[in-house]
Length: 394
Image (spheres, rainbow, N blue to C red):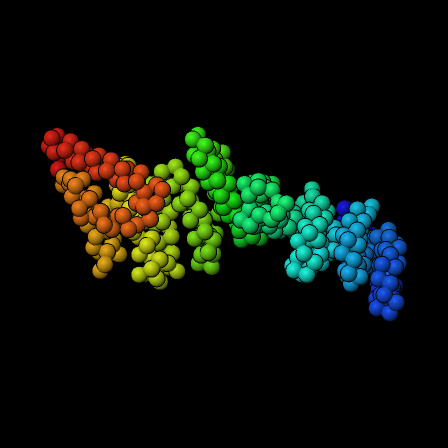
């Protein structure tokens, strides 16, 4: 690919005239291929003369005429051939790529997935290794990854096994180092980073499930680690802006999943706190806000005692939001863990058991484990209070 040199001749008028003739030939005689091929000879002259604007005009016309021919393989032939021409201008290639990408939805809808996949493959081939095409390549790759994810959900007759399709989807996205792309807007970078994290999570969960079914240890750890590394690339300052609330919500929901996998209860509580403080969540006091607050309570009392946990639970205890009507039970539950008073596990079960078992935190496949973890936290709290009393500390 080349940047335009010094123009030796202006072909603008000649190019416009030739394009007009080509369209007339296509519409009149139906000779679309012939019309496109005639323009290619002029394209070579404009390229050799470093007339970038005329070259771009011609390659766009060639691709448009090829598309009008309804021979969709011919479109890809033209795209590939023109992109590989010696000294082809970056602007011309970019213009062609943009055109072909605009037609992708229509191709998938009207010509079917097989043709769509051929177009996706051609676009990925043309854009491979070209920094100036990193953004369109990322978009095409994302579309292909989502296709394979959908194939994992709804396998077709001759498609790979769902686990293989899901792995393919994740692998495709992992090849994109979007955080280094200078041509891509930050919002789009983060959208793709979050999709990378989400697919890694799905693969990791599936591997864990397969390993558990086989009686082995969880096998998705490598993907969980990659997910954590990916989370470090997300600009939290950017997603904290009000206009990016959807990105913030998705990010912290993913981080909840990651932290739950490792029973990192304090990290789960911190993620739910980030969700809870969002204005859009606060607007729904009896829905999203209440649910997030309840999860903060549950995961804070599940988290082992340390300075950070103690500071966070004490701040929550004095937060007016926790003492609002219909939240008395959760307020009283937190109170048990911040006051220097002994408590009994049987009392916790009696007074709070009904609300705990109604929550997704203490139900489902991992609910029993968390209930046992809560028992451990109660025992630890009692032990800590007893030590304080025996040593004479208030």
